[in-house]
Image (tube, rainbow over all chains, first blue to last red):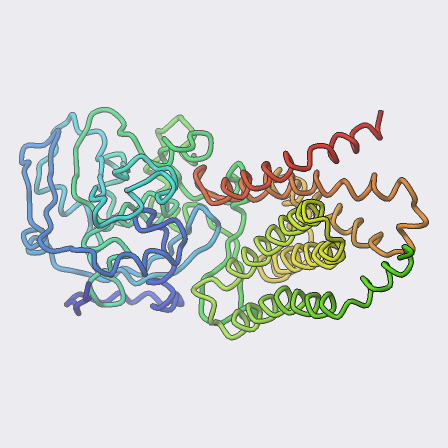
Length: 273
Length: 209
């Protein structure tokens, strides 16, 4: 799939970016293979047009919306965010998109809408990882994720349609994906076809696959180790070879504590899991 | 023909020399080449992970090969093949050591305290580390003189290779994010080889009774 330039408002952040070539060739997108180098190879013929997103559940306005409709609703803006993978590596990516809140408000969620559930496309013909347990890392497809309504409405939560000034390459979750920068990367679901407002907490893929290792919230915290590895620091995927590698200490909420910590002031359960 | 002469023919067998040279090339060149690719940033987005995985899997391949070699040489009754086993065994330790050195130098940037903490606290790393210690012990006693000096103890020690294999396969499986991963295939291969070598394994266990 080709990528096209986008028109958007620039972000003035001066975080050093991960090179574009690394952002688009190092992907956890098991639908296209479990090796991080697989998606760029296997996703190039992925069809992202026509595309529609079905909105359902506890909201006044539901239905199916085409990507063209969705793109008309909000102006695009660039957001340079840190991305922290649960595997203890990180990137800095210039996304292009719009706040998820601006999209969700149009559907007028009701007072029963406590959570928002998302679903990735299920299309085994196009996504080899969905054809077998072996190819797809044992995930029960389609991939599903969810946020509390407060998290979904937070101004940092982004619906991304591009990166590095162009439309998303398929391996990065084209044509439309979530970006939640204070949570581990697996929360940022790719190639979304469905959004549902729910009263009950929705199922989420990784917490279902390995319930002792991944929880619903998955907020970044250097003090809460993954059962099999430390989360205290992270390796930066930057430019350069073996001798130009760098580590950094992981930050609470991936460095977005000031903006998001208040979301959890009333949550009693362990929201770092 | 007296035994000594057979020995000599085998030792100086030109085919064996050629085959050994080939094995050295097959084991050594990929390790060097991949390091070069990593150094010039031509190993994908994350050269560190790629290198660590390559050396880790390289160690597994060599280890499985040593077991296949000893099984095959018994089946084919050719001691020639058996004479390559030590070479392969040393490459297991070679690859495993590169795996650990890259983990320490490139993944952890020589932060010794953190690395030691990881080795103690993460069971999959603990298991991998124990397996490496076994490989080091086997390497240090791999010479003819050590073999003679140790007598029966030598095979007792060197049968720890089976334990090392089990630990390495567990380490491999456990290091993967998803529970359905390629390590399962290697575990099956390892289990099959251990099953075929079960008589050796039982004899070894008897030594401890």
